[in-house]
Image (cartoon, rainbow, N blue to C red):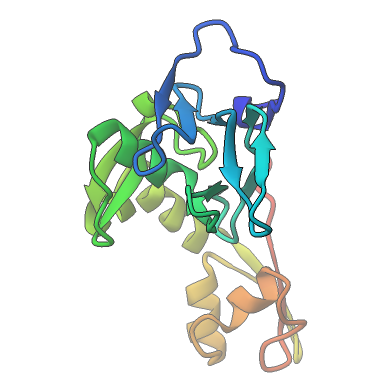
Length: 195
């Protein structure tokens, strides 16, 4: 289990808590990437009071695989926030403008939101960081077995297969990722390289 999945209200050995920027007195984040709601009492919509116990906030994955956390302000308005952006903003004392991004620099795992793994970068720096280029080259240079329409051949790359067979760029990619059954009657599968 990763730290962000641990919802037990306890401080893990070596864990330190700091206020979340814009939510001081309401929430804290830890150096292990967890969020904690602080105990408090506030007025509710009926005019009475609601008591909140201290608790560890749940985090969930967004559609891109990054963690997000729901935070509620002192007026009771609730919103989902990117966990890594909230941690970096809180560490640096300012909300990150939209043109800046957060890079997972030591380990590229999107759920490892410990402060030492996060850094502020531009979009260009983020997409060119780490293994992204190598992974992209690896993806396009994998051998692919194409069959159908009287063809049963192994090509050195997806792009070479597409060019040779007159398939529009990206067509075989849809077949390979499972979003389509065929491209212009051709089916494809990656060739497993045995070592």
